[in-house]
Length: 60
Image 1: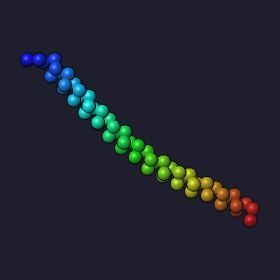
Image 2 (image 1 turned 180 degrees about the vertical axis):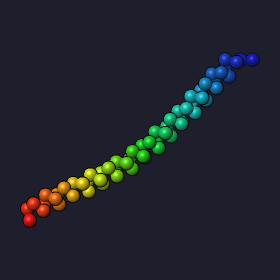
Image 3 (image 1 turned 30 degrees about the vertical axis):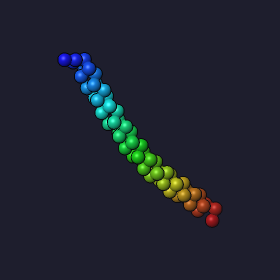
Image 4 (image 1 turned 90 degrees about the horizontal axis):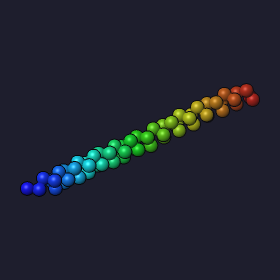
């Protein structure tokens, strides 16, 4: 019986499974960061508009 061949095949399958899990985690994290950046940008725009309105009150 060739146990070293079986061990090598098991390691290949193990590393393949780990790579799949890591790629899924990266994909989910990328989606999360993309959604978060949209919220941050929206908040910054609202704050900027608020500051412009405050400055406008000085010139009226």
